[in-house]
Image (tube, rainbow, N blue to C red; front, side, top):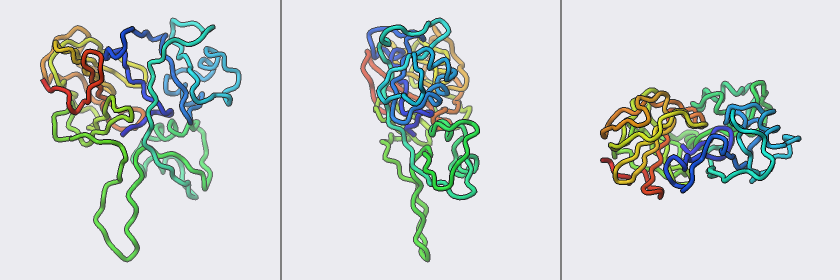
Length: 287
């Protein structure tokens, strides 16, 4: 589903897809603060310390973080900012979650287990620290769509899946993994393809691997470029089976599916472009 890990934005890796005419380096990465973001949640997303993030962006009070602020994410080679941040390659995307009212004896662990999400995903979405203690009556965010309402007492009804407002794609067409569900990101520039952990990820096309390495927030990422100008980005790979520069055929294994941190589930990120313009992954050619 359309999630984010602890914050409400998805780094779309636009530079890798050629959606921008300029290149971006690790030190150019900028995060646009969305509603609900905290210094803690942003630092967890990018695997940096809260102190480093605040020092790098000249933030003295973490409680003063405001929606719309642009935070430069420090890399090992960058130095603290002294002027305005560089161009942002971050696009906000609405997450899918529902509110849950904490009951007596509830714990984060018990809620995560009953809802089929990871404890860390639950902490990240709500910005909870490791030692956070729930309070009875508190409302917290649960990743995913709200469960279907229970049947009226004394009546029976067939079980129906929880309804999601997210736009879905046809699972019967060929996807890089055996798709259980395909949901569009809210920006409609890509999809999340639900599969099985460690499942083989197969390329939808032949072409040349132009990127094969980790990308912050997306695990290992492989990008395949075709002779026709299409670029296919495969994110959330647990491991990669290809290297940059490899020439591959359609159906070549690119790697194994990992857990997408934002959802806590094996969801493949798939984004496609053609000559720099976004393409609906469901309509992209399967060469």
